[in-house]
View 1 (cartoon, rainbow, N blue to C red):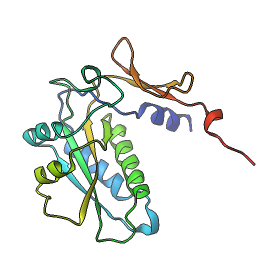
View 2: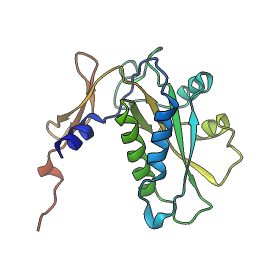
View 3: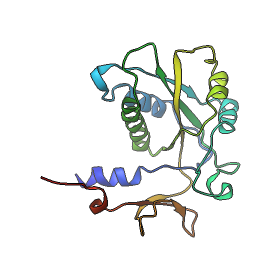
Length: 194
């Protein structure tokens, strides 16, 4: 079990990437993991759009916001540090039972599968939804609601869990520009145990 816990501790959000493309088999594994993820009543209401063409990736980078807790000079990837792939996650509203729990389960599976290949990710909700749908050629698809976008790439930094101090959960960069992600202690989140 320790191996799984170490995997989960290392599978953090990454915001600076190496200029190395994510191979198609890694994208395929990530999509397969999302496809087979648990979902309520086995509804399977999610759809995906993949962006790997360099010009389209560059356009997507303009339509997402990074690391709102950090100043832009620290949280925004610089030239040469941007992701090399994106996966847009859509909810098909023609289907009954669309909900965020199913999207969360699929996103967790997708990012875990990518991390299994050493590919980091950043799930993003602060995005320009109309512009992204237009870029993807899906702007006329009213039935598709863009839930989130996942940036993918090989990490150019480290990211680690640290203990929250005085309840402060804002992440920060250490002296090496690596991400520190404060987590509340179990005693603060466990309400009861019977």
